[in-house]
Length: 196
Image 1 (cartoon, rainbow, N blue to C red):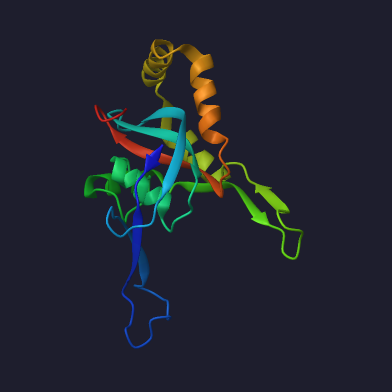
Image 2: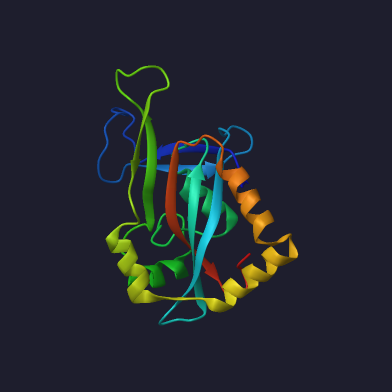
């Protein structure tokens, strides 16, 4: 669980026409413990990978649930934790940008589920839309990454040391039960020795 308040600001806005959007105008998020809005992201590791060309570079496929739904929340929370999203050139370190561009030309972020109120529907009536991980992103994984079996073994050992699969699964279910706005898959960077 990541709990860190976020504030956003518009960059490149024309003071004479603040509503105008176009090239060079974008939102920028910051972790702001003084003036930021509460933000919570829950995540679960799906798989660990290594770059096929550069085995010293690792990646983690994660399923996230946004509890609060702030602008740029996943991107900023992951950067705050030290693990930027693949292809997130706004928040990544310069050395990550070079390798990321070789494997993925966009932010590796996919919206897999959203629950929305039914327009004109009864109070509490919702519609859920589901989408599997985009084919393009599946191809990014298939063509550029290998499963990191060593990292999976370390995760298994950690789970065993902390109460086994049943306890880990129970804890993950407890965390995922909260009502959520959105769910995403994303791929985060991690450098050798930095994984948790």
